[in-house]
Length: 231
Image (cartoon, rainbow, N blue to C red; front, side):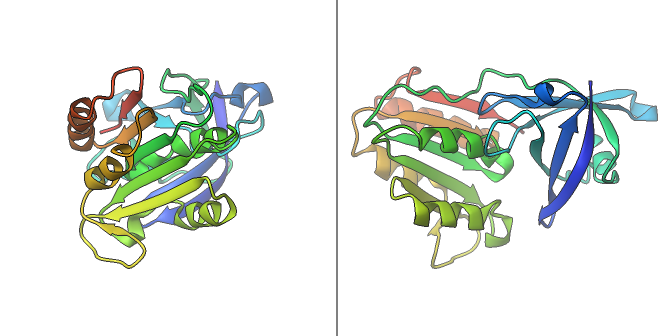
C-alpha cells in the first residue's frame, strides 16, 4: 500500500512529524502503540525498510502521524527528509504487539521513554487517561530542553488533567522545569510507593537494559512491564 505525505512539521532540530494519508481511509486504523514499516528503493542500497511508531494521539481512519529523527549517517532518513508534501511512499498497514493493555482501575500506568521513544506513548497515554481512577505518569528523558518532543502538549495535558503527571528529565542541561540526570531515579521514586503498576518502556537500548534490571530488582514481573527498543 502507499501513503501520501499531507503535512510535514519541524518538531525539533533533527526531528520532523510526517502526517500520512493512506490510499483507503480504513487502512489508517491502529491500536495505540503500533508502528508502520516504510520502504523505498534507494538505488545503490536496493529496497530499504524502516519501522516507525505511530505518534497520533487518537486512532482514526483518516491519517497517521510519524515522529522521525534524522540520522545523518543513516540510509533511509536522509532520503525521507528530502521528500515533500504530496509525495507517495510505500508502507505497511499498522502492526506490532507493543500496544496498550488496560488492566483495571486504581493502578498507576507509568510510561518511561527517551527521545523519539515517546511517539507510541501519545495514543497510549490518551487511552490510559480514559480509565476511571488511573494515575498516569510520563518520565521522558532527553539530553537538552530543545530535544523534548511535544513538550507544550504534555504541559497542557498535565494542566488539564490532574491524573496525568509529566516528568521531563534532562541529562546534559539543568532547567527549573525538569529533573537533572537520567530517568531511573525518577521512575524508581514513583514505583517505590506502589504494589502494582503497568509500566511501558520505549527508547535507547542502554536505558531499556538498566530499566529492566531495576524493575526486576524492585519485584515487578513480566506481566507488569512492556518494552520496545528503537535503536
